[in-house]
Length: 302
Image (cartoon, rainbow, N blue to C red; front, side):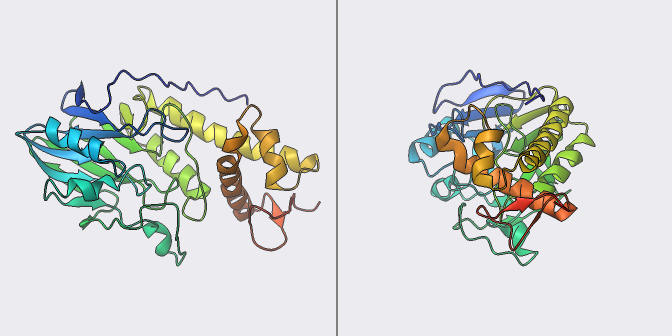
């Protein structure tokens, strides 16, 4: 790959300890490390006294207990959810046992696709239903803090970023992370939406990104531009594969993702599938029948 993204994996933290990471911003990291979560899910806290919690994380009672204990004497008034993957929203149900704060999100899992008549039935927290539905541009305010809702579908169809207006800081969930690119997995994930959401961020004036996994991103526009270039390069790789007779996703993945551990191939294949859907919509590739993991692909006119 010729696009060099300045990934960073280092993070100074301790599990189950709330730490101040910027004025008005605290974080506690859940102990759910892995190939898709890096060190774990970072739950953010905005404000002091009466606070908002962003992404309570997985259904991990130790994590929620640490959050509640660390906020003793304070009141959680809002719970904001970027999206409904299992490492982000299930903690809401456990947190509800300790506080009555309403949850805010774009909608249940698959909400953005349901609007287009596409049913999404797996891969997320199907039990989560937000108390308050929010849309792009909505403002949520509390004591000493306010956020603007920035709708960024792509990683999931209900993905919402939250812009902390007092600091020009954007909580990016899994849309933009500093340690890795996001997996785009159809049918809920959508490469076309993801690219449009990246371009949307380029028009903003945010000065720092706080992803749910990994460290902050201090030069967000440069980072986003490289993410867009990276996805274009993946499409160029697909064209190269087809020109060389590699016509299925299964045989493309090892060629495109050299050095990737084999246990990660299924996830990579999902992202290639998302790229195929996007390229088919543009007319860059063709196939007979539905666009699936097992389909045979070709270049137009070949």
